[in-house]
Image 1: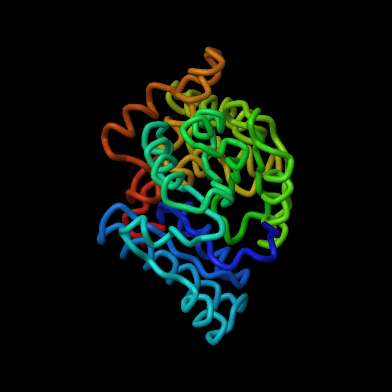
Image 2: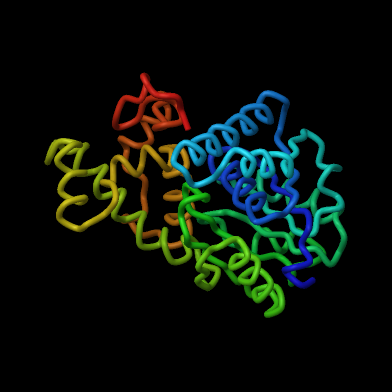
Amino acid sequence: MDPEDVKKVGVIGCGIMGSGIVEVCAKAGMRVQFVEANEEARDRGQKAIERSLARAVERGKLDEPGRDEVLARIRGSTDFADVADADLLVEAVVEDLQAKLDVFRILDQLTRPDVVLATNTSSVPIAHLAATTKRPDKVVGMHFFNPPPVMKLLEVVRALTTSTETVDFARAVGRRLGKTTVLSKDRAGFIVNFLLVPYLNAAARMFEEGFASREDIDAAIQLGLGHPMGPLNLLDLIGLDTAVNVSDSLYDEFKDPLYAAPTLLKRMVAAGFLGRKSGKGFYDYSGDTPA
């Protein structure tokens, strides 16, 4: 399929990443149907999209008629059948292999055989997902970055079975969405997280050991390296549960201690301190509306 012929995109999962992907696709003029596990999650995803678009209007990046046009292209559902006629599917559920495999099995049976099945995974090998379908040549990684409406990068990940046509299609769709695409081989973590995770884990260990305060660690990286935010602030934005899951995937593949999630991160996740989305992580967000 020509990327310009993509009229409807199905997005499975409308959490932090999924809601942003829905918004990006709708802004590009595509109709978007997202699917969530239950009505509560569906409504939460819809409200996250509405809040993001409201902020865009407040900042002058979008006018009110434009916002209304974007919202009119978006539909939410709890029924996979509503994406059966989509021209592109993007899976954006939790960073858990079994959950993703379950989604890919359903999509493979439900959608047209010529439709590309993409995953927004940040660490799960694409080959595992491709192998559960009858179209492994049409399974590809399309890894967006948080928040998708702002971040310009899209990692396109090619499994051993992904065809050149599928890779070209994914990169062209990325350009249509206004993203700069980079191509990665199918290795856990791909380009960005392979380099990022050891850095984030080191920062969490540094704080855990009492080497420096959270504020000083973050300020040192922001001002010393020119990063937009420090590592502990970034972990809160990513979600500590997601960070642990990504670390686990990388450690499983490489068995390098650099990728092992620090004990502190695991204990914080067990306590429900997941970062911005739960209201508390390395910092306290209880006075804010979770993203």
